[in-house]
Image (cartoon, rainbow, N blue to C red; front, side, top):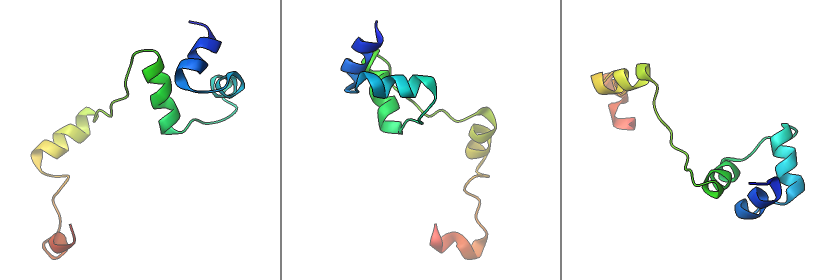
Length: 71
C-alpha cells in the first residue's frame, strides 16, 4: 500500500503522515488507532508478565486499611 493510500484510509493528509513516519511529530493515540485500522489491525494494551502476576496475586489492589474508602 502506498503512503498516499494509507493516509487516505486513515483520514490523514499525505504531509501529516510523512511527518509521523519521519518522527518529526508524535502521534496521538487516536491517530495511531486510525492508522492501525487502515491496515486491518487494532491496538490492544497487554500487561507485561510482572504486572499480570501482581494483579492476579492481589498486590496491585492491596491498599492500607485507611485508604480503602478512597479506592
